Length: 503
Image: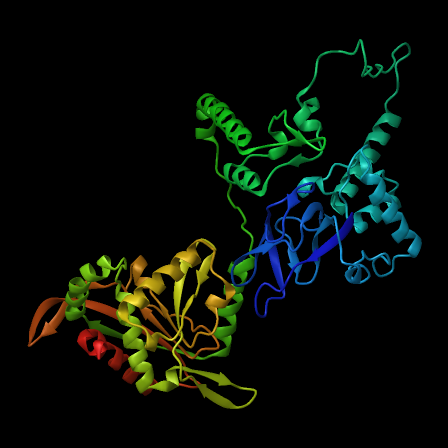
């Protein structure tokens, strides 16, 4: 067997680190090359990390929720074969960490080997093992709180502190004459048959084997795999299948329902917590940093206007049936995309980027339009490339596909890069006008309000008409107010007479 270490790969352009959201495997699992071993959230998207090897998972080096720099080792595998040419290059590091002596590194290796004997398997990184030696703690006595029972430095400290408290208490407690400690019951014949819940086979086992699909099901149902009863085993380890997880989840749900019924009166009177916290990291943190960079770099000016779109409403209604026959849901966004590109071609300054280092404004002669999408993780901006080369139905289909992938967190970083202008549709949630923040380093963003019938003046009379509120934010270092107004007028013109878009 050869141990292969696997580092967090570069999962996206410009990504320096990622949050390890979830492990899809545990120590002892068999994996094949290409199997998903982890999910990592970067500042751009949720990315699945595949294995590069066929083998058995040996150790996990990162906790769920931990920020991991690109290039750090996150998992190791036991692999049956290895090319001789790769043996020297991929051999495990025996020099230890900076400042660690050769003797300490050797001790870590010996402990790791001892920990893999049939007497018990311990998963702990070198730093935790070194701390255990410094504190005089037997690493095999420490219960790990990490994935697969992995022991962290905090686990070692907690065990050490609890042992000190126990020793102090034992030393300070006098023994009454004639009173002795109760002997430990023997484990063989004659032992008590009363077994506590903590001594059950499920609680005693150190690892549980399961396929990635079974683990995914357990995570979905909120089931702890180590608590699932099973009589199946592989290589001497407990093995859990999907039906075991489902049966356990059903029993837990029934028990919870009974408990809820009896405790309803108590919970009804309980006061909610005054405050709670949610992590500020991953996509949410990146959104915040990007917004701050844009707002404090580009001086924003917002131009508001309203497009009358009765003809657009009628045209879309006429084309909807044709679109549905082709399996496409025709939305107003497809028309807006075409109108925006028409405006950008007339006023290319809005399809630009300011390069302060070189002292130039880069005018983009291509039209990659970002569409802001609200997701559970925050705002994501998929990019529809080459909008000027695509028809209405193709655009409608692509926007729908990208929005779905963004909401499902399956969108790739590449699908959110290369934008030249952005559209945000806050009207989908109600409201008319806003002051959208530019998707820096772009120089403009168009916000769409809710399409509704509103009173307008026609030949001196007030009538109801479908209108679309527009909010255009510009970088005033690059774009003047007059250009913003002219661009908006062009967009309004194409939305008011959508047949022009067909030209």
